[in-house]
Image (cartoon, rainbow, N blue to C red; front, side, top):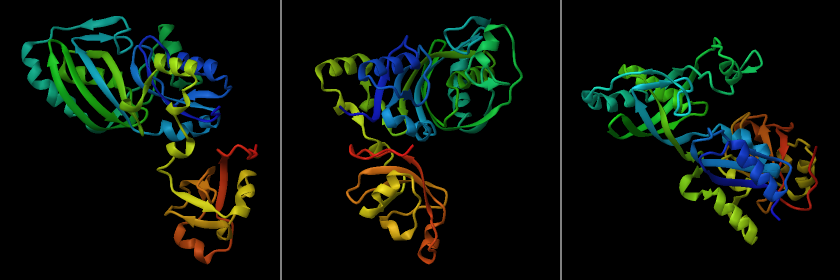
Length: 317
């Protein structure tokens, strides 16, 4: 059975991200299972699930750009900034506002300072904000700079405006909706959210959780799993010579004498360490720029995480 990899699960509404992790853990009977980017319970769509050594690449997946289909309800503000919360303010939405919605939505393209919502897992002085919110407290918190690369306005029907958004990690789409509502002067909240892409994982290649459960019962689930090397394919690569394979698997750094071939890389950039056959051995980091290595005899590749996908390999701890 495949022990390490990543699944592109289409999360159903009503499930927390942790619920999905627990379900996959129970099916695969693997201790280490995690997700790469929380979706709120009522949100649906792409939720990368990492298992086995796949959990070690979560930081690389978390940094990836995200894409969503969004429905914003105008005229209602809620304490959670989404449809699960209590309405705290209601406003009339004039008919002529439809002509201003597209412009208001588009105005958020680029970098902007976003205030994290109180109902979030961000910690202030060690306490998650949502715990303070449930206790009726409003905690002072710092805004965070996020980036909206693209917004595609889809139209408005009554009080509900639909759009797609491509954004950086750490962006709260429900806060974006609230901010758009504030800019229009009528308030607003997130009504519906569907993640259509998380980094290299598109919705078109995802599998519904119920369907994955069926495939597991049929013994045909492994075709849905991505290998670690496949998921990390955008990172630069260094192929090590055969005799250096075991050194890498035991976490030993090495210099130019161990390099068989390589792609272009920069100092301090994460890179893949591969054996001569192209099997992933580990993630490492270059201690020198590539234009320095030919005139250097010092160690310049540092092993950071052993990720060998070859069964007989011994993992360095």
